Length: 180
Image (cartoon, rainbow, N blue to C red; front, side, top):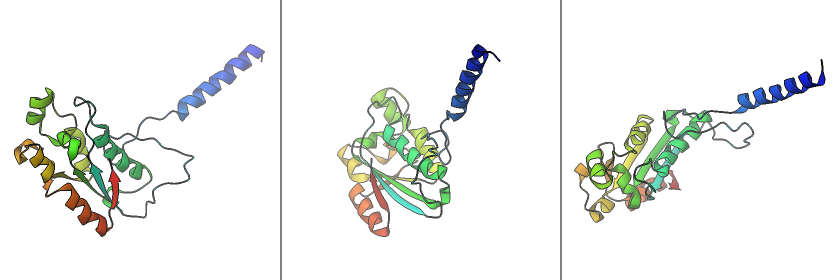
């Protein structure tokens, strides 16, 4: 075999091996959102034998109201990362309490349209998260401060007395607090 053919075969083998290493995003628990990737070299992973109790304190708003909030998508990523490690949906007990600037991500389409002239891009993500077992609570105090009524909020979202009392209710029950 001549040198040119050997070199061509060598580089073709490297190219093909690189294609097999490349990954596409995975969505094990939240379908279509929060895409994540396998990390074969990871030495720390979620334990698939545990139940996870997580409360997410989401107060950061979207940087662009025409795009899915990275913080809403991050909840999907968190769910999918656990799922990729073998944690089942039934082992994930996740509550998201929404307040501050993040409150606008839970507006229904009519209210969102009136403010941003576009359908709320976060609602499909919230639906996929709800389908995966996540519960959402919007802070009633934040709603009051922004003159929002129940009819302005997506029916996917429950209303809490406050973010503060929701967090102080669930943390003593063993929920891990994450801040987004």
